[in-house]
Amino acid sequence: MPRKKHSELKLNPMPTSSSSFLFILLFCFSTAALAGQVTLLCSMIGLSLTSLPPHLVIGINGQFPGPILNVTTNWNVVVNVKNGLDEPFLLTWNGIEHRKNSWQDGVLGANCPIPAGWNWTYQFQVKDQILRVDIGGIIINNREVIPVPFRMPDGDITIFISDWYSKSHKELRQDVEKGINLGVPDGILINGLGPYRFDGPVVPDGITYLKINVEPGEFLQCICYT
Image 1 (cartoon, rainbow, N blue to C red):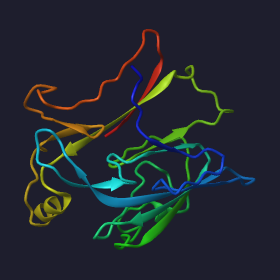
Image 2: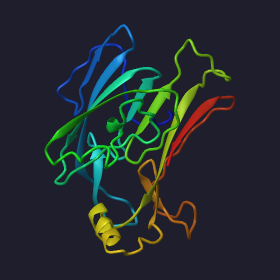
Image 3: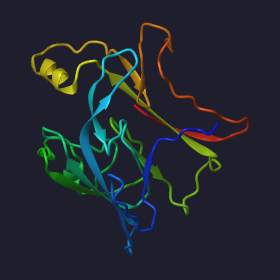
């Protein structure tokens, strides 16, 4: 059975365009480093889990978790974020070191929120770093001229682990503003599946979960985002 892979936005050095996708990839070469541009559309999408009532979540390009940006060290990355929500939005790049361009970090105070219906373009150069994400991920590959202390893996396994509350993000924000303790989450999600509770069986009955199939002798790289 083939291993299910999370969708990726891989910036290959080949021009690509298609009206059937929600994202557009544009590529160009420069004398300094490869530059890749990608457009991300933020919108509310419905997420229905087995044991909890469905509600809307923030999705990227119609997905939750969002697609993965697959880049290489020293690439100059340009990300155009379109805010399709009904409220201001900020996309932060946790773990990315912004050298002499801290205003691209996406943190409130360094950046103003993107108004509803507007867009903002982030521009930064990626280095060898460890990241964390909330609604999507970034894989930063080493350059081929830089050796790594292990052989090339036979494949990648990407795992997203996140808290899950039955309340919407707007309700949770109102509770925080009122000084109400959010308490223990209703569960956690793994790759958007679950929820898995802390006080019951690891995989309770009726829960959809992801199977990862491996073969004896395979060398796999596990990329975990929390």
